[in-house]
Length: 449
Image (cartoon, rainbow, N blue to C red):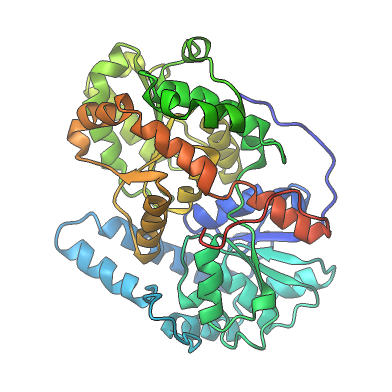
């Protein structure tokens, strides 16, 4: 695995997230250099008042409970759909004024008026630096309590609900780093001032990119394409384009380094873990023959790691654990994000629900999409398909058949290439450039993404 370079960092901002799922924290982790390596967790920082902690805990508990409920027949989907309707994203067309606050915005501001976030904002105001928040409630609280420095909010999906915009967008000081062009246009419909919106792309981990030249990304992509195109169909069709963009590909050496590697990841709420077992079962023969390596990412959930380990053992694959089946588990979230990014350099296919990880197609990772959970993930799915960088999973019981049909045809290699070409890769650098007053080193993004 690649070793990250150690360097002394000077704090330029307060980078703030919430540990509600992984999405907001994953974006914050990529931006940690702005905070001198530190990310402040708004719902779990040292000295947080008991009242704030309890309120955040109830919010997180509701999120995780409802995410798991969706998997319960009949009753679960009804409850989930009710909550999803509460925070749904309105149809974009026809374009119209969507600035009127929805129910969730009103509820957020009720909590803020009761003091949610006030303690943290007042503490930071004692030594003010710009705030870069990856969750809208934090930015809204800073705005409400007249934080004396700049307030930025990083969007974490391919489309966003009205909840991301403040109660009175025209008067608000919140500025946005937009994850794609659709979010830019959506924020305008919500009434956010155009000069408060910056199209940057989602902040991807720098250790997977390698600066303006993207030399790490390109090296990983070359190896990945060799594994994803064993018959050379994609490479033959696009060899001039590939050579011009990232150099020549020499696959014999690259494919000898490791087998085809699939990373299946479970979300922060722990939902969809049973799908991982279906994948193990279907790919078991290829795993035993060392043709495939399967990474089952348990994140910080010990019970998920235990579930995967017990399931693999029950399926007669105990001896492959730690070799053909990897089950990474981490005690701390920061440790998880660092470990996850290292595993990505050895990954050929990312299998995930269309969460914030949809943006990781920009690293040249083809994405197999498990069923979306929630309105925002449905829009992420549409965005991935629009780019040609991801495809919904087929029946997981027959993964061994349909996935390798896709691979042998060169189709999955094409998804990897489309993601690299079409999706933003340098969002982290663009955000840093803006915060540090530097001229951006990355090319301008087309508005559609």
